[in-house]
Amino acid sequence: MAAPRIHLPQPLEAGQTLTLPPEAARHVQVLRLQPGDDLTLFGDPARGGEWRARVRAMGRRDVTVTVEAHAAVEREPARAVHLAVGMPANERMDWLVEKATELGVASIQPLRTARTVLRLDGERAARKVAHWQAVAVAACEQCGGNRVPRVHPVRLLADWLADPARAALGAGVWLSLAAGSVPLPVWGAAHGGPCHVVLGPEGGLTEAEEAALAQAGLAPLSLGARTLRSETAALAALVLLTSPPPVQPEAGPLP
Image 1 (tube, rainbow, N blue to C red):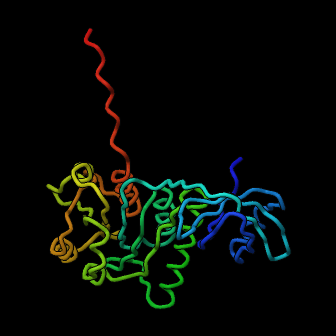
Image 2: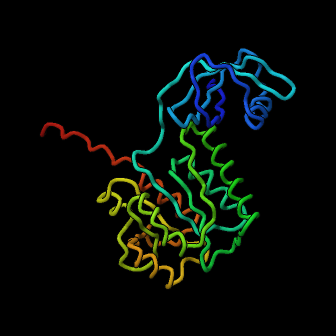
Image 3: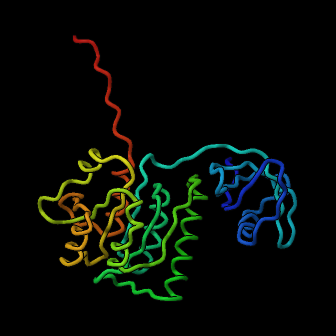
């Protein structure tokens, strides 16, 4: 049985003994681990990968572990894909964050658009983002990812498009239902490297928003003739852009 995985975003070293922070300690206690049990720590900002560790002592509130050895293993897709999503309502954003994290998304930008049903501002927005970040952490603990994607603060689409820092995310595209849009797999095969994908909310993007995306240099791409929910479209795009190309079978001898 694989050792439980605990997110611990701090520098670690072999032989170090440390007391887990409260959230991580509660996780270990919920799992009913005992002194001597193995666990895996990940989130080291300096070295990445993961660390083998062992529970040293269990208190009523405190958990002490000993760090043993580092493994330079990463399970991230070859292409970094950043999602910028017009936030779906209800629990669908939670589901999107969880599943996108499992599939290896690089980051998630929640967007407010003209047709966004979920309206978040101020303290309420900050609480939601903290919740979504915790969802991403839990998903990484479950799926084996060692790089937790950042969930950025909620922003208006126009403000995000105007931010010069967006250029660091690579080529930009948006998912469109317009006839004649290039199929996303075709674009993905022709464009390597990191990219960011914009998706509208349940009601889609307005014509003015699509014009703003085009003016900002993003390309409209298609996922096909069917109209998908925003969270379904996000995951479909992520899979198509991160999946390695199929291996071509070697030609056999002529009969």
